Image (cartoon, rainbow, N blue to C red):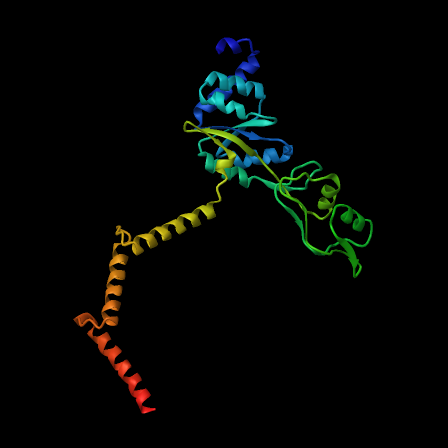
Amino acid sequence: MVLYTQHLPKWKRDEVEEIKKQAASHALFGFVDMYGIPASQVQQIRRNLRSSALIKMTRNTLIKHACDEMGGDYEKIAGYLSGHSALIFTNDNPFKLYKSLETTKTKMAAKAGEIAPEDIVIEKGPTSFKPGPIVGELQQAGIPAAIEAGKVKIRETKTVVRKGEVINKKLAEVLAKLDIKPMDIGLLLQAAFFDGSIYEASVLAVDETQYYNNLVLAALQAINLSVNAAIPTKATAEMIFTKAVREARSLAIEACIYAPEVMDSLLGKAYHEMAAIQSIIGK
């Protein structure tokens, strides 16, 4: 493979060597999509991640050269390169990196032709617009609007575009005027190589709250099964014995089985039954 890349100019050769050096000195090697991110935001993201990650922008061809020379799984991850990819190096695990990148995202106005990341819903109610051409613009964008009390009002809540659908030019212009910013702009992790495995973004998008709730639910269900099926464990043995004692006591009382542990309850039961009979006879 060295023979394949030895013809590279010195500056390209140096760039390939720098990529290999950073990959060797970091636990994680990955790609992020930089498409559509303003230069000012890229600089801000760099500053935010400075203490935990290094972002390197270079040509995709040079990244492929470096991956080919490193071989193994690095050659496989090179298949995730596309468009405006940049390199990212860090010692964090991929889940922590994904979470960090999510915090760098900001909301931006939609542009014509972009894909809606979620359902875009316009809520009914008054707007800040005065009567004018805006009414027609809203209606052309599929938003039911009318004039009430000298203000433009959205007559009903409307989903103007579904998740995954294309945002057309008229709708993009109206959303901007309504100050609705549906687009998440930030670094998108394409793939990461860590500890011998390649991770795609789809497996890293973990809802931590839901994950925690699922663990709690699973633990409660396991305890419930253990107790009700009388399968003793270190965590449930005491609860199983307590349940057994309670059920045995209840059985002894209902069946009038004389035992020192339930004599007070049996006498109490007999007294209440006697009092009930006495009440009926007395009437």
